[in-house]
Length: 108
Image (cartoon, rainbow, N blue to C red; front, top):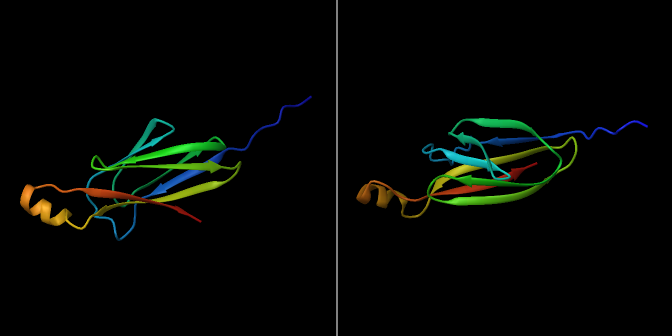
């Protein structure tokens, strides 16, 4: 009797959108564990187990959570963007800091 081997999946998170403000890191956690402080222009790829997962994105101003399912052999891809809000630059000019928001889009 031979055991079956479950094929792993892959996860790629990219931060290359021209809409990104190119400032601040985005802290990324997969299933509650830190996996990266992703800066603009960078991406990360890692092997994951098939099944349900939770990604948490945090730019220290705002947090965003994405639930996803990965099938065996699937390559799951996300694009993450650190973007400004309507009043961000006015607050930066006045207070020296302003809120930035995280947008996450599953690709493919």
